Length: 620
Image 1 (cartoon, helix red, strand yellow):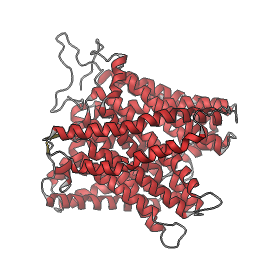
Image 2 (cartoon, helix red, strand yellow; image 1 turned 90 degrees about the vertical axis):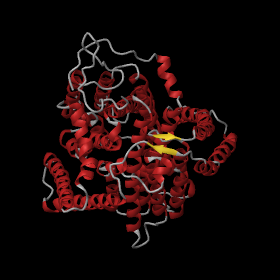
Image 3 (cartoon, helix red, strand yellow; image 1 turned 180 degrees about the vertical axis):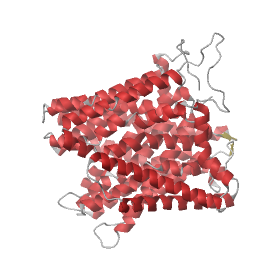
């Protein structure tokens, strides 16, 4: 792609138009899908860890369950199957995105049920819970792939900033429900650190299954963006009923939630007793929400029966059932090769001394395992397990398409994707340990991070989505990069005021606001890079790449801080954010990203974009 010089940008939205974009029905759809995507992740990680801890399992066993979440980092491996492989009956009925969405949500329900059905203190059944956890991680990551693809295909680039911010909000709300909500439920049902109750945690996970019905309801109420509806009246009727039901949930939820947030904020954080909703009203409020939630199964049945007939417009790379089976076996054997190589390399090389050497070993381990999987896959294709043309279309063509569209600048873009979040992810990996070392109690940390921090992340997401509609993509990316790295300096300030809640709240509020802003903007950026021809594969690669290096490096944040101290550690996390600013400058100079970017440079107004089969922007 050619460089683009500075010229007057295309017309941008007014502030009123930017705000009005949040009233679009597509925003409501993505909010609910984001919520559905956000619920499972903490049921694999923090909530499950606390359950196993209360059950009395050893810490080493508990941490091993964290491997169940590896699917989030390697989801790009099976994303090609989701992008191109049709599901029998379901794809013709619902469309390729909603069909996979339904299957992934169904797998999430099965996984949660499996985990809930196992008491971890009983002998010889822990393997079944581990199997459920792995299935939950895999199915949840699959749901993420499909929802991301659906969001990108649902609207043009002009709406992606709005949809990205609302997706972050929905995802975070889902995390609150599955995180804090699960802990409250387990306590309510009668389990605690001193008095473990399997029935309490079983009922908690069953409740989370009921919560996931919101995702199923949304899947059957919405429409397939890449299919033609043969009955628009049914489609519009479903959307109208869905929007009315959403209003019955959201409007009272906001009216109730804002006073609860303010009461909690003043009472628990500012130590100023405040009660905005009288206690005697709570039973009525709870009954209202129970009645609304009880209507969900009936609406789900209605939406299932009222599906309009559709014509899928996207051709699949896999044309026959035989091709489907062969490609599926190729995928399974390649994944097994990756897992085997990862375990074998770990056994061959002993863990070296030093943080840097350990980090380099992990990089070699990952790259080596990936190389083995590729070699095994290529060998299986060579012996005729799957057609070479089909495998190339699924796994090679999406990557080749990206390099064709962006040429040499593709490397620049990949570097930016891989390093953009490195500063805040590496710092965030150590945050809870840091707060504890600074003398804050678990309750204080929970109030600040789990309560106030999450709401600030949502607010930052909304702010990012709003401003991204007014500014050039790379300019708002620059703001996010500066904010997310500079806020790490606040933690240095906190090291000089250990135990001071005022400094802690200041750091948490500003840091989470910046993180929410940067996340929403970055999701919009990745969406703009993604081609609608290979939505699932390309976005899965981008989203995996954006966390892979920061998470691997973040795993050694504890060792780094032990060697240099907390103040120097956070200074390092600030400094590693500076190269990102250089990458943003170079991308802004050489690449056109997003609908607010300049699209012409010469006197005739002709585009300087490199001519390809498909323009760089997902909607053009």
